[in-house]
Image 1 (cartoon, one colour):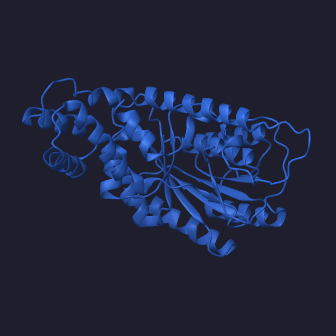
Image 2 (spheres, rainbow, N blue to C red):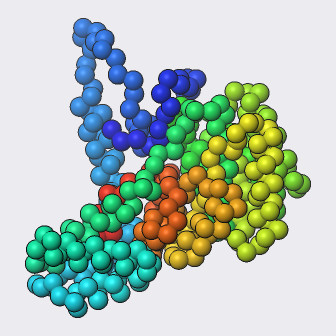
Image 3 (spheres, helix red, strand yellow):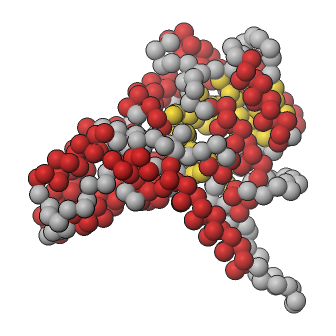
Amino acid sequence: MFSFFKKKTGDIPPEQDNSESSLADSSLTPHESSEVSPGNIDASSGIAKQDTEKKQSWLSRLKSGLAKTSANLNIFGGTTIDEELFEELETALLVSDVGMPATEYLLDELRRKVKEEKLTQPSEIKTALAALLTDLLAPLQKNLEIGRHNPLVIMMAGVNGAGKTTTIGKLAQHLQNNDQTVLLAAGDTFRAAAREQLAVWGDRNKITVIAQESGDPAAVAFDAVQSAKAKNINVVMVDTAGRLPTQSHLMEELKKVKRVIGKGMDEAPHEIILVIDGNTGQNALAQVKAFDETLGLTGLIVTKLDGTPKGGILAAIAKNHPVPVYFIGVGEKIDDLQPFVAEEFSNALLS
């Protein structure tokens, strides 16, 4: 059984009736009991089969989503390992937005492996590259831990069009499916459409949304935290207006939102997550650097990886500015947002 979130040991969330199931319903390993009543049917094999089917479905969607990037890297059909192959690989990695530092690292390591392990076939280079990519990406793999604060306050940031509000809605539903009560704060007070979109997600999932038609986004965030504390809500997610890192006055506003949240609850926000569009390539790396310097990011969610030829951007992030990637998205459905697993991602890139 694979994990969608990591739960802090010892915390037992309040029971919640969630009649609709999704991938997330089986993503947390339940507490195992040694008691077996006579006559009980062991359903573990059936559950394991369902988990396997869901996992295979996700891997299929991941490979399909990264097909354009994978096509860039499909250069291992030859019969010899020579300098021409390495030159082709260098071009393919750069076109896939792996970036120069990560590309140079991977090529140097591959050359070392060819020499030390006496590799002779391009297919062996492909296998070695998959292993190197997995090792490079492994530090980014980290589960979002729930249950360590009540409420757990998550501040979401990103540029316009990254899919931030939609991601909040999907993540809220996954949290509910993992027995977490959720409250949303519509901190994008600039765009009525953003508030309306968040309200739709709230109505769909029966989640309270704290919003104002206009005003101070920091005040909205503060009110949401206070409301969650009063109602014993497990998780608060604070939406913020999309902004470019070059808009210094708007970046300062984000700092204010963070400070005011901290006044509402000690040590909050506990998570500061940047949502980035996987199609933006090297620009995504610039966003990570800028938002991290401003806010101190705890994690990333990379969206819109389906159909992009720039899936190598995660390798660039790993090499240049390694911030954990909690989730990746390859489509519009809720199950198209899943935890980032380095080996799965590497294999999909080179499938």
